[in-house]
Image (cartoon, rainbow, N blue to C red):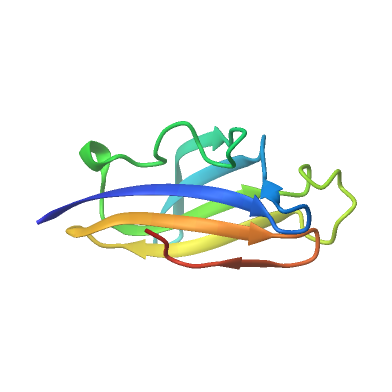
Length: 112
């Protein structure tokens, strides 16, 4: 069985650079309940310094990643907070959720 973990990174596609200093929160969702698992800031490479959830702490389920990108764009853009809800399953290997964003749009996918 493949060990699972969760990581992310943010690329500011308007500037062509990683998005540094963006707060990322991770919540576990269970029905109407929402439990905060962790939060981190992105580094100079647009990544968190450690996984949002490492293999040892991995719990399968539905999660919300909340990206606070409004401050990165100086409050001048259209987008402020971006919630991305994902379902993580045990044994499916590493989950990587990149966020490509501008002040007006975003895209995400399951990366490697």
